[in-house]
Length: 342
Image 1 (tube, rainbow, N blue to C red):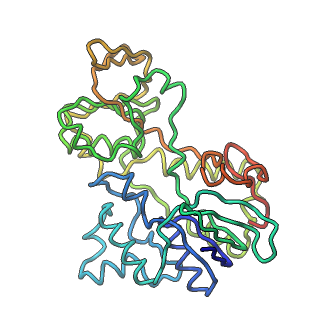
Image 2 (cartoon, rainbow, N blue to C red):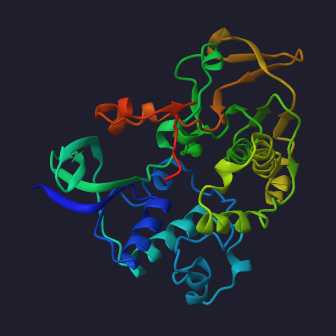
């Protein structure tokens, strides 16, 4: 059955749900396609804690906030921080119910730009139905952007490594020797979770100095965001050196610091940190993986976990790759080049 709307929101994760609530608040005709919070449910391990604080809620109207959700349960913010994955999923479900968000539990297979009066875009969902829309908002998250450096995986034995987004059942690694490649928040959190799950040892190898276990300060960000309301192009208008300085400040807060609640969980004899190291060679005698680091150390491991983050490349998004939009976009480093109107 074909349908039509003014705005099609593709994706029902945190941003998709937040935008759905806001468009409903503004009385904009819209449809949401996606399985609510599916990435968080399917690609994040039980027991995971979030860096987000209670003020990082989903409601632009500031009605159905995390603080209100906590208060409705007779709790205080301090009782639920740091936020667990399970708590956040409960909040998202409550938010969806309170905001009366209806999501079509399906996936868009293909998105095309069409020359049709009243609808510039055409989306085909997995059952073959067509949705036509004047505008489309992609809230697809980073499922398709898992970064696995080619020069690294070329040295890894097939079927003996996984990216963090594909390793969520950690119980299967009980009693195993693990190597986590990467040294930022996700690497150290997976190391802690692997230790919690009973891994025999967890090695963590990374090229840089160890990050500090200190709380990030994001208090300076809100005024920057508020500037977009009155002057949407202010960031684009900055001299390149000022943009780079601002980008670096974001990078420092997000990358050089790790949440302090992780420190006691990582300071155990089962977890060994190897700063300023890289994998130099790898052999598999008798099925065991022996990893040689460039500092001369050799590690015997059973499983390798890539905590190598995500890198945007919209050509990897299936619904775009199947449609005709990619050829119409200017790209830089895998991201669309935006103009002053967006």
